[in-house]
Structure formats: structure tokens, C-alpha cells
Amino acid sequence: MAGAIVGISEIAETIRNSSAKDFGIASMFPYLDDVIRIADEPNLLERERKTDLLKWSWIDENTIYYYFSIENIFAYLLKTEIIERWMNLNQEFGKKVFKEFIDKLRGSFQFPEEYKLIK
Image (cartoon, one colour):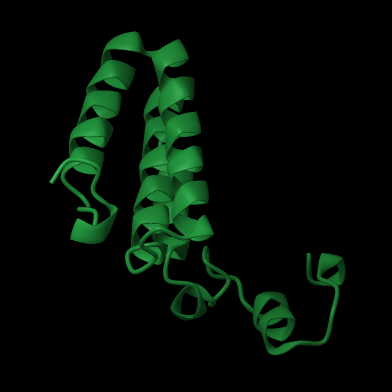
């Protein structure tokens, strides 16, 4: 296995020399424990759900201060793709998540007075 690791970085050396499940790099990557826990999930549908919830959480955490920016637009695009995928997989769950998404979107911002059409 050590011969399959390419590179001479600190991470590559740590992986080469570790026999731990997380290769000893969990402290370097905050989501690694979550990803490993999800990978161990035997139910495929539940694994997919947990993976998408982790993605959703990451998107929320990394776009929290990007109001009206391209980052926020892409975040909403990614979230709608997740919702669309789940509507095809599990229509009831997809509708629930979509409704929550729209409700959160409605209450998440207010236009400044000078940009409002109706005053």
C-alpha cells in the first residue's frame, strides 16, 4: 500500500506510515470522521442522504457571509440540484426539503429600502 502513495509531502508521508483507518490525518481534515462514518453506512439510500446532508452543511458553512454574491448563487444552484435529485429518488422527502429550502430563502434576506419596488 505504501508504494501506491505518490508524493513527498507531509500528508503523503503520514499516510504511508499509518495503519489507522483514517491514516492518521483526521486532524488535518475536519470532515474526514464524518465521511468515514458515512462510508460505513450499510444502507445505500441512507448513505446517499447523509452524503447530501454533509454537502448541504458544508455549503451553508462556507457561504454564510456571502450575501448577494456569485458564491451564494452557486450555493443555491447546488442545493436545488440536491433537491431535484432527491425528488427523483424519494419524492416525499424531496418535497419536504424543497419546502424548507424555500421557507428559509424567503426569510433569509431583505432588500434595502432604496431597491424595494413597493414602499
